[in-house]
Image 1 (cartoon, rainbow, N blue to C red):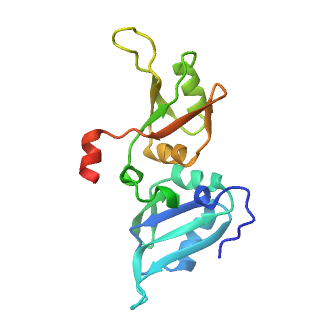
Image 2 (image 1 turned 180 degrees about the horizontal axis):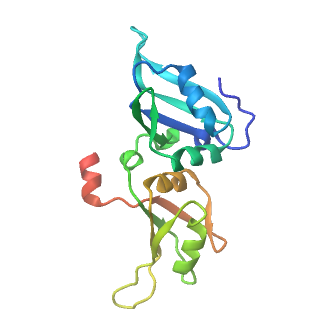
Image 3 (image 1 turned 180 degrees about the vertical axis):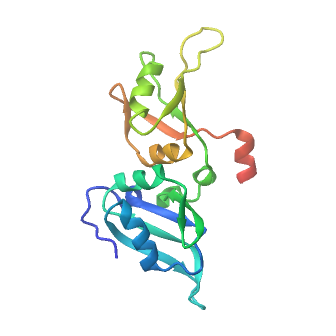
Length: 189
């Protein structure tokens, strides 16, 4: 069982592992991921009737930086198969269609007039490599709009940012979510 005496919420320290070999066990999964740090919980999900692996599992580390290390070193091969590693989605986000989508662009709401693209790069650069940051302008007034976009080089960075609820730019809390094309959203529903 996971120990709840950790400084960070479990969802920041936990990974979903997909495409597992049916031969992968809790022990072999733990052994593989211990290379990245202290594993506090591991489970290969099994069919209730047959007890056979369902081909996916979860690994929980003692600190979230270990999840970052795992994600930096993708792809991973366990028991002869390349596995998919993804950050878990908090329970309150699971039903949202965009939670499953893999995107490299972040939508930021609540942008104030004195915030700049450099402020966005500085804030979000803490999470990963920022490819671009833009604050669209109103077509008529040419004043900055109240939202922005930040592009990253890896969809995992967007997943990581979205797990953090209280992000501030220049001392002001902003709203963040995956920037998802409307057409893509329709496909997911």
